[in-house]
Image 1: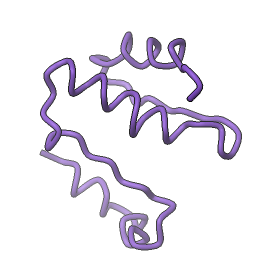
Image 2: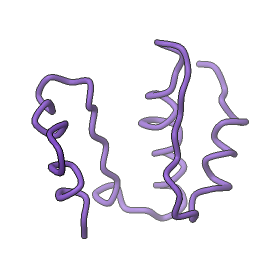
Image 3: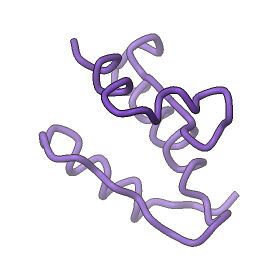
Length: 78
């Protein structure tokens, strides 16, 4: 596994910002792994309950309906 400390620390430092975080990179460069494994592990160790973490893979066909205008936003509103 490649350590991604720099990117993890960037996410951690901006965790409480209300701004949207966007992670970009080449295909298969570890973006999803960074979020779904490394950052998720950090959040759980920091006291966030696992059921409070939502992971939605928008490139998965089973989530195609979420790409329709307003659907994802309505689900994420609390």
